[in-house]
Structures are given as C-alpha cells and as structure tokens.
Length: 123
Image (cartoon, rainbow, N blue to C red; front, side):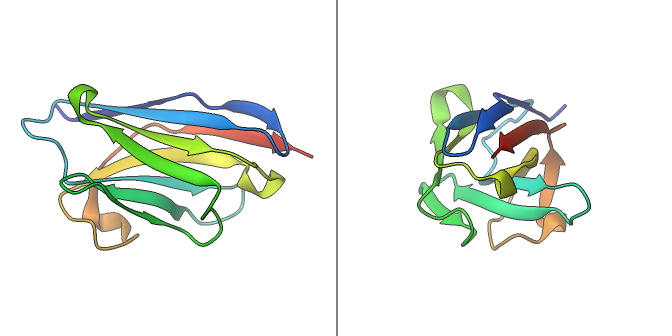
C-alpha cells in the first residue's frame, strides 16, 4: 500500500528556516513526480514545489522561488523541502503528494497524499 509520511513541521519566527521531509513507501518503482502543496486557513490548497524524479528537474511557485528548495534522496525514497527566510504568509499545512506525471499543480494528477505537516511562522 502506497504511503507518504511527512515530518519536520513546527513553529519558527519570521526569517527562520525549517526543513520538511516526505518518506514514500509501498512503491514498486519510485513515483515520477513528487510535490509539496500547502493550505492556509481559509484558503485553497496551492502547489509550492515539485520535482520530476527521473531527471531531478524542479519547479516552484513564484511566491517561494529563491527561498524554498525541493530535493530528493533516491536511496531512501524521500523528498525534502528546505525553507529559508520564512514569512508569516508561509504559515500553512504542508502536504506531500506523488504522481505518475509532473505537468503542473493539477491535484488529480497526484494519486497519493500525506497527512500533512503544520508550519507556523510568527512575526
């Protein structure tokens, strides 16, 4: 059974850093696309960063470019999200997602989701 488990969320002051990790299990072969989404209270879920695992190509939302970095560790089937220069508007529940294709942020393209990790940034 495919499972994604996030870890590493927490609380930090503005300007601080956090690192999220997503461990994928139950795959016979690594998912071709892994991504991070987030959902702030009262807002729709939005894509933040994704990585096409066969090549390592990465894509970011404009709001996080230059501050967030997505990376993969194939041996452990994990994907991390390093977040620096955090802002209060980054406060959200962050979700790891995996899919067979990596065209964009269309959620139905992602067929596995984690339970979420809370990130809170105070001013």
